[in-house]
Length: 65
Ligand SMILES: [Cu+2]
Image (cartoon, rainbow, N blue to C red; front, side, top):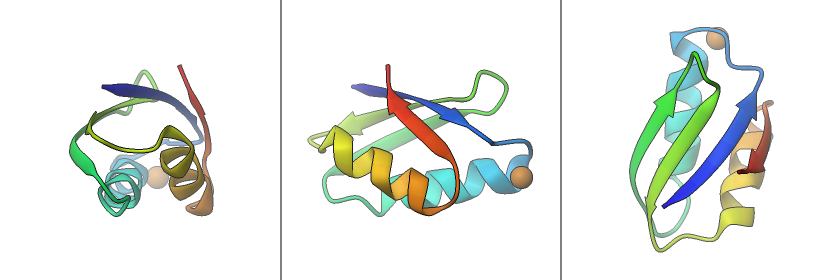
């Protein structure tokens, strides 16, 4: 599992946008986004850097934790 810290999410739309972005990354399996903590947990055989850039492309700051 890869965990990301994501800054900038402040509503359900943000959460949904981040989930969509993560699901669009090759190899990403199930995705859990915690809006209050600003964290995402991603299962699957997926490149962490690709996750970070997919989330950043949507306008949020992301880093692996
Ligand atoms: Cu929002």
